[in-house]
Image (cartoon, rainbow, N blue to C red; front, top):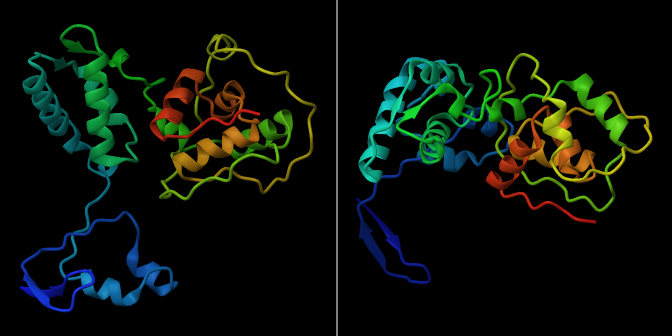
Length: 249
């Protein structure tokens, strides 16, 4: 029980509340670096629960999938089920968005699938690598080479907005087939190669990485898809999911 005055008021009002905070940042290190208010941290840090990311407790994925599927079936009067091959794809995914990303993936796939069985091919994955993991990893050498091929970004490009940094996945991402790139709308001819700095590495956050790729490629989606090693269709979905407006010049 505590007392809080109303906004603009002078008389305190008794309230009974429980404050629950969640973050994916290391607040103690941020306090040491002066990036987070120490007084606020000491006020909210009473009982701390450290939960490992979903990729470090993959044994929790099957029961979570079963729960999401069961809830979806009840809400939509369906009888969906997941095959072992599809479950293997889900268990092997990176899941930087943790349980919320898994929930959205299940709901999206259940909505789009035809029939009552979710198979491994129903997921927008390429060789058991989810779209988010592909976006979170771009090889630096390939990025520099792509920048040299595409030329510098236009001066009118919009600066990326801040977003929580996500851990980079390991292993090179497979390149999309040629048909996945050339058949998605018209693309401009590639400009002449220009020198680029070796220290120009892509950012870590998914939204930042998407905007970075679009800026490097002059906001041409086909070029940005090649830079990120995904298909233009996947890029379009990722831009829509992150609410990134494509600039037109």
